[in-house]
Amino acid sequence: MIFADVRVQQVFDEYEARAADDARRMIDLGSEGFARRDEFLLPVGREAAAVLHALILARRPRRILELGTSYGYSTQVLADAARAVGGQLVTMELADYKQAYARERLERAGLLPHVDLRCGDAVAMIGEDPGEWDFVLLDIWKDLYLPCFEALYPHLSEEAVICSDNMIDPAAARPSVRLYREAIRSKADLQTVLLPVGQGIELTVKWSAGNVRL
Image 1 (cartoon, rainbow, N blue to C red):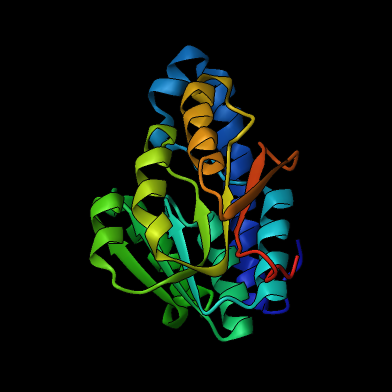
Image 2: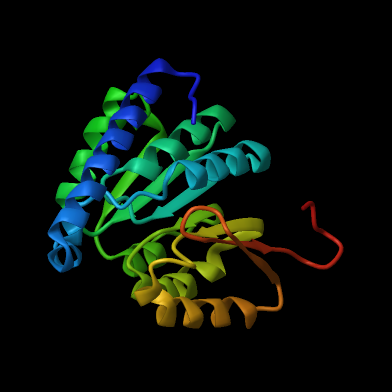
């Protein structure tokens, strides 16, 4: 994807280059690659990133939540869109070394003022925040999708959007994904659809009858 800001584009291109290198390394490592997955970027990918960026530009959310900063690939994309619409991104991550990597690149891209980086347990941090969320990217370890959803659901604003990554691949995560999708479908005020973009994005919208803009 193409960014208007040259600094953002340069950092994003660096992420893309690392993603390609990491993918090759994982293949070379074979079964050992999965055991060492914390070392790798594991990004949402260019197609999914473009969808996320476009959704934020279209919906113009005030508060954006990212669950799973990791090394900051999607954080860059969300932060650039947040800056464009005057929003603020809060990104949460358990691994401090990953978030430090993301912070350095956000600073180089000129996006750090638009991002609140929080490090710790995501479920606990969600509960500690009294505000509402207008847009959420859920891209954390898949066994945490359900507890994170249960924590954030009461804090969704009207017409809030949740984008959940890895809903098709990897196949090993599908048991956790099924439980998560069942929880979404149990809520009468949520509409959801699975998009075959990247590794599968579940697009979920909170709405009340007669008040839908989609």
